[in-house]
Length: 389
Image 1 (tube, rainbow, N blue to C red):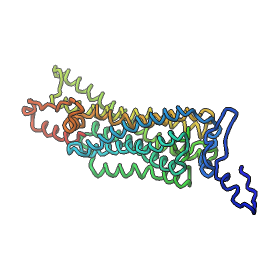
Image 2 (cartoon, helix red, strand yellow; image 1 turned 90 degrees about the horizontal axis):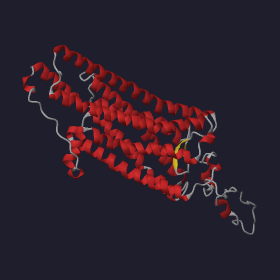
Image 3 (cartoon, rainbow, N blue to C red; image 1 turned 180 degrees about the horizontal axis):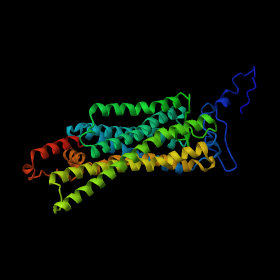
Image 4 (cartoon, one colour; image 1 turned 180 degrees about the vertical axis):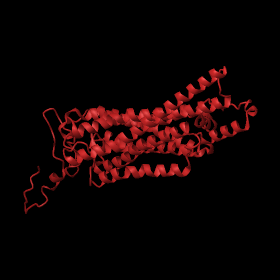
């Protein structure tokens, strides 16, 4: 510590030394946080302060990687938000959840300039204020994305297994979206006010998340609670609803094959039925893929937080903890392109509005045999079309 002895001849003699950070060195070199001012270092978990400062090249490599992720995510999710809101045919209640997921992914990456700046400055450059902004936006978008994925699974389940009774309405979609952000708010407010948990830097001190390293009961209880509500609950819903969808599709296809075999025909489907089912299954596959990506990308982060709170903290080195952080950001880049590949109406809108993208999506063919079907069958088909996303 600096010498704080008072001298009447020069009362300000030691002021500058008090404001400077105390050098934190080891036999091998500088430790993490060596240049962090004393009034900021208290916000850093002691676990990170025992490690050597990483090479400059690692900071610059991560900064460049995050720049790539940011450009890819903002472009892709921006196109999804623009496409699904600008096209009247895509402004359906179900697609409001798709837009909300794109918004979560968009803002998840919109906060990365904080990380990029810290990386180029090689540490905790923006201090606790930048850390709080990073943590608040990250919590809303992370928990929002997980809950939105669960509601998308619920909507797909209703559309495919109960096409007439499970129709999504604009009012129901708005209530779901409001619930998503209300669901995340208690965790965000608790950490921001430090009434339960807090936002702290992690790894190389360039990104921030909730504290999972402080060794006390409150931290362990907070980590267990947020892990259950933001990961276990949404994942359980996703697995349940998509397993029900798969079971329904298999049983439905088996029933159609059995009936066609009894009638000695190849298929009971008309061309219109086939095109509708194909589009619906493609959308369901896109949703399943996105939810799978969510599970794969967020599981390492969840496991890491549990290790920090309940396990062997020595396993969590600064370099290791940056891997789950990158995985979480990567899924925000992939999601919009999964929809671009798998959502036929979205691809058609992009083809029409942005022809330079060279997307080749064919419009669904109208069946010439539809006019020969009975009026009851036509009515049932029109009802099913109204429920399609």
